[in-house]
Length: 466
Image 1 (tube, helix red, strand yellow):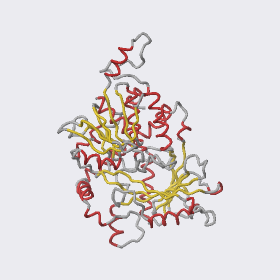
Image 2 (tube, helix red, strand yellow):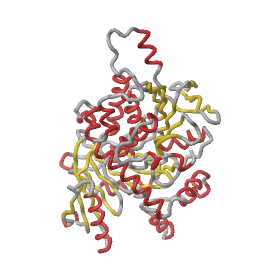
Image 3 (tube, one colour):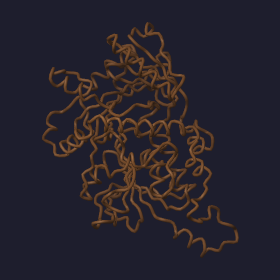
Image 4 (spheres, one colour):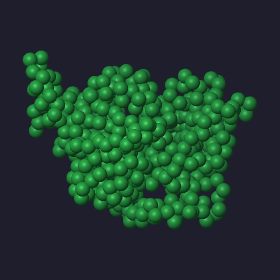
């Protein structure tokens, strides 16, 4: 475990600040009030797992008074409705979407592409901006740097997650359905060279998860199969649980509302205007620091400050279906080349299975693509017999993965505003990277050391001049 995490879990104050963590009984009310007022006030925009974990480490530090503003109807993504389908796997950069496959599907007029690209986006101003930044990050050196940064961020979180969950839940991980599982990845239609490539991938995983192993493909009627021990988390339940814990134990304030405007000078963010549930416009001001943890919504929030944020939402589709006990799958399965993940939802007390996949570039919207649901339905029926499949209980939904132009998240201080910070743009890896990301952010804000093996400069938003 890193020194940074140990210090925060033990609630030891930073040496530069003599903040009293536990107020002695003899301390009078005036002293208490003075101490509270001495804390820096921080406003976090976004209450997904990235915002929640950022709030956790900052509030636990003891020097910060944290407020979180959250949308009443959050965008569905890694946190909302993700259930059990979270795999803690260390993928390098640009496994979210295959650009070559997209181009091939366009040229061949593939009617059911693995990665769909809506051609009208070529006329979209924000997409063209993102694509230009993407093309500038495609040289060998840049890709290698991105891969290294992503692996280190994921590996650090992976190694810290057990202790983090124990600390958050008082050693009761069942309350957030955090548990070990086996992921089986099944490949079909591979050439001999491709099979050798997958063997190299397994060797790569074994550097971080030694129990990763190749298994016999005959059982799955496949060309290549490997299994890797993973950890699963009901992220929606985790976030709901953490909101209560942060509020009750650490005094974090949660405000429901949708950000409508941001007031700023040339160098400082001054206030955030938001509409509450009754559509009344209110203002949050006088904060020392502002942190954006808003996923794809970060694009709109950036525009409010005159910033172009190099994030594009990659659309994923999910189909939640209910099955009988005899149809419950054992563990989590990924099927290639369809890039479909099939998994139980939570501990599966509901009999729900999630079939999910795809990475479509269809704009930053939650509009479903009808033929994607048809593809998921056909695949779902491979695991549930026709007579057991109940269309009336099937729930098709769409989520967006916030992908930066170099596929590396934006973590750290803004280059434009001295009191603005970012922790966003994690693509499909938000949950696994959330702990390390929050610790990197904390190190920047508190002027302390990053977790061992990480460097804040690798994730600095300054690389995109925001």
